[in-house]
Length: 53
Image (cartoon, rainbow, N blue to C red; front, side):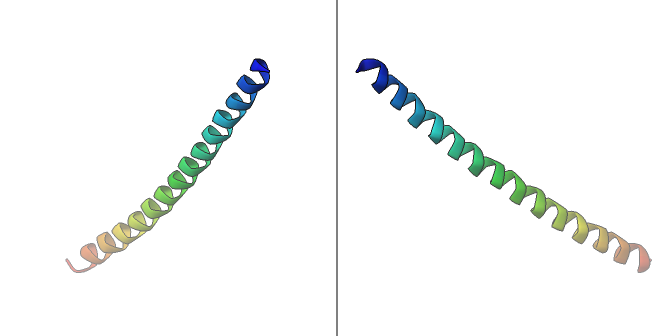
């Protein structure tokens, strides 16, 4: 049936979109974690710089 095929195709595209979204969400989480690490390192570096003056 043509309608069933269209529905299956839609479900396949929808599933692929969900997977992409999950991957992108994980990438955002990883980038935020990396930023937090860099922020902490920068704060430490700044403190050390201030303390050496």
